[in-house]
Image (cartoon, rainbow, N blue to C red; front, side):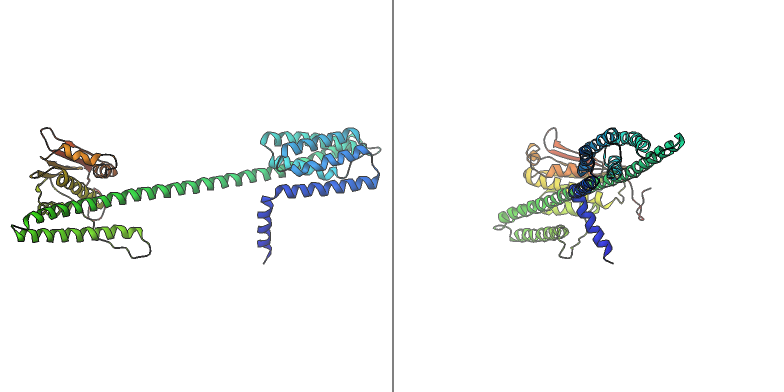
Length: 401
């Protein structure tokens, strides 16, 4: 039951300490080769060849090309200067061939195969002969050693392909995780932008209406107490409505409390909005052209906010006794929203200054649904806001004809 956790811990440790493991292996093989060399009283050249075959294996995974090249040179030197095969060569050479095939670049791995096959064949001919051996027997011996090294190379190549596949999957997972984080960051930015836009619509409209009612009530208090009382009632209702909308919006940001949901305003609430602005002292006419129809909830909210923002700007910037006309023009696949006033048109440009959210929010809402919006002073005075929004009909079942 404890084998799997131990193996997992060993694999994690080994992946981070390949240099230590390979260095230990090279040291053990070198000591073993030196011990055999001393025991057999071989030549000094054999000692140098032993060390040259084993010590480079310490870098067989970190620098496979360098280590494999040194071992290959030592192995061919072995063929040239030593009359008998070193036992350690039968261990060190296959390890070097395997490392080259598994960890070296493709060109080095492919070069290692013919070098190993040729060297193995020469070793089979030079060191595994005997008196009376025929040419066919010499060929079989050479072929056996060459095939053995080719098999080692093949296993190493399979290991190398597996390692590259794992690296590719790891990199792909890293990129996917990075993409997921970027998407989450983008979604959070979009949500903050949406909340900021909604906050601006709620606060700007409500405070503008409250200020207008407060000013009117203050002037009417001395001469018309009933009008002042009506203004206070409108202020209270507007404040409560704004507070309810604010709580519903802010509850989305909190996960430790139940969310408060309120009815989302839409196209059908525009007449009530116009009437509310009339009570704030604004002269507003409202007209509808064409046959109204059901639209998606998001589109309805955008229409409501565009009208609300435009009327708020009129109340703030158009000046006293400004008259406004709100028109909804229902076309076959488009809803045109137009708000026109005859007040101080240039003054409304204040809202378009850098950092302003009003007109920017109108344009963003239109683009969100694939439409467009334009706002600017009219010829002869006044100001116009016009938005064209795609508005295909939505059936009661939710599908579009």
